[in-house]
Length: 293
Image (cartoon, rainbow, N blue to C red):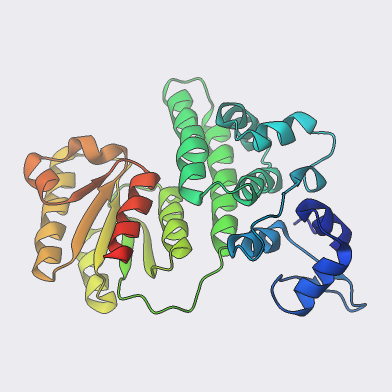
């Protein structure tokens, strides 16, 4: 984990070190303090500070955070060049570069890019490329596992760094994947996006049978159920589980949303009684409307 000192944070934000001290002393800017009283910052501290828009005129300079030898990377992040960054992250995945991928994502967040756009334009794109290469025998199973696990670890770290407000929201979400679907990363993305807009969520995890989902719903009592579907072993079994959950949820006035590559296998009856999400942007936009209604 990479730490910054007060001088580096001041350089990133374009302010004096004394200003950083004032912000930390007042509690506006979080940091860790050593036994000797020195301030240590994570980029997530900077990101969360900027998110609160305490000072909207700050001009962020991420070159102070990233490796100064990676001038081109800094320029590409400044331009939000997702095409370049996809290739860059793909190589980092092969190298198990958890810290480096984490730094790139946080740098994009500091530049103002929202989580949902980073996930759609960058992370999911890279994951799809990994899957396509593996299915066409152009990537070994070892490399596929290494890259997926690397991205998974980054997603959990990013999710843990999202600051939440203690605002009570009358909405609750349960998310999971169905039996045989082990794709965990989209669930972490869903939680990150919901956390960002302060909607409580429960992630049941991947590969959950419909009866277990129903049991958990009885306990959590959510307003929405999100089914992430990226692997379908049998279309009939898949639609049968979806139909069962739709009937169960609608009796309890729970809205059912379905997203992922498995959407195209939905039968018309299921498609017409659920809300389809094409990507993480759809998820964000849907719940923004829900929050405003």
